[in-house]
Length: 295
Image 1: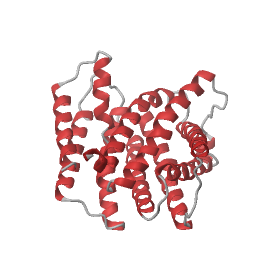
Image 2: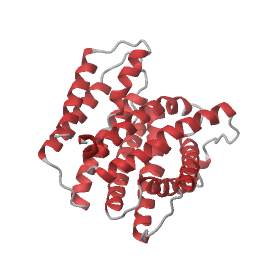
Image 3: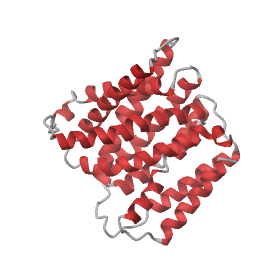
């Protein structure tokens, strides 16, 4: 089937949809729970779910080189531990619209880093597709919204840019490890999450983090919401991300993963909010870019 040739792209789009839904949840949770703690909770829950899945499957880590494990651990430490924490901090400072705008920096960064460090070449049509998709997304989420009163803070911009850089670098390292090994996507997800969680725990011991009021006694409702969000965004989302990085070039995978803002539009429309012509046009431009990457 033709679709089997695009497993990576389809996995990335699926992950983007899940991240869209979970971002709505995390934006509300972030008002009550510190980003560092939120990242820790979702990591621990996802690790537990993956371990259970691997036990049910009877999977075992076999024939894994030390270099593969080290690369995936570093990838998780950078992309998940640092990247996701920076993303949550940016989300709290800038709001979803501007944070997602900064996230569109990740695909070109990932493509350039992959070209420089692992020699991954993309066809001209793919580069045009990346540019079109990013322009479309940026056009949609940079539209001024009268309801959005969040001021742009320098600190928020720094967190957003750091998140994009960390996620791009983490993706490139993960892509290299996956292409050099027969490790399954689920096993690689577990190693990355462990690396990310270790970093988050380490960050909690920094003097700056100690000033944050951590809430260890959460209600069952809050824990339940975090568990559901972690299942969708981290357990399934990062698993799908690993599949996309295994079967698609870094630049293309990162571009599809950055399409989350496009999925917000129909959700917002269902909630009764009016969709502007500019937003619709931006979606069309992005879809044209995605189509180019399938050529």
